[in-house]
Image (cartoon, rainbow, N blue to C red; front, side, top):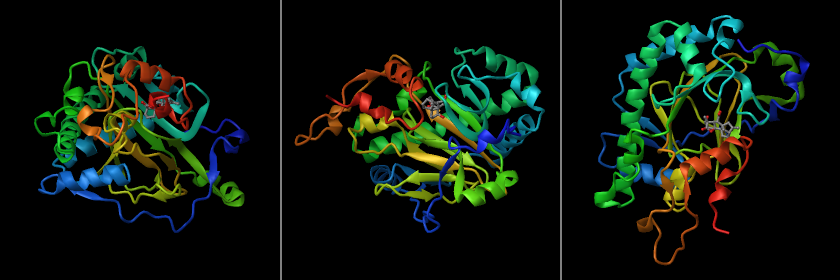
Length: 335
Ligand code: GA4
């Protein structure tokens, strides 16, 4: 349970403008991985929106439910017990504070590195103080996420016409030193604050607007709504939840490597007034030393390369010094 320290929890830090009730996004592109058109549909979706829904993904429901139940068990512990795995360094348990630069949200979370070499003290504490089943379920789930992330990236590579080089993105995730991470977010319902929120005519921010810095994100949530994306015309649209599918979104590095063809979609999460939302997100990233720049084959003759080269280490260090809503990708822009 997220504890409200005082009335200031209801201040501007948490509140966003009420979104237009008509802005339910009902045309989320759907990709069936087993369909021959999968690559074409995903490329179009990544160019136009930066997000699509993956159905028929083949990931056993038991793997998902097992982890979801373990995560819920973790979150129902007492605040002092959960705090033993925090504050995040950046990995571990966090509540309300996101990153280290003043971002706040109506959320509690676990943030974990998927690289066994990055042994964070907070992660060690988390796994030592909770039943072994949590660690096993996390490992099992992350294994599935890595596979599906690579499969999707290879389809994208084919769809982009990379031919023999279609593995150019997926090999970065398969790499032993891939710096991917995994987060489980629990957004408590904001029911207890309902009256005040209704009076303010605004919504409670669970996770503020941002783009994901990595290559590709694979999100699964329970059936509680909350996820919104910013459409190309600048309006916010709610994505109807679907607990049996995954939502895939383009990260900043993929926007750069595709020379801006694919859009790293700006998104946020609003708290629900009655239900709590649980989401699990795998962020597929390259090794820290990987050099990221537009792929020459994706820069057409008439075009220029829009971005300069940076290593993921440089970009990540800069990202961690930024606020959630900062437009980090400008660091890559050619001056
Ligand atoms: C946004 C995407 C992922 O959740 C994340 C976040 C990270 C964090 O929570 O530690 C950041 C945020 C995210 C980008 C800007 C910085 C770093 C919080 C923050 C304010 C794990 C990631 O990789 O970048």
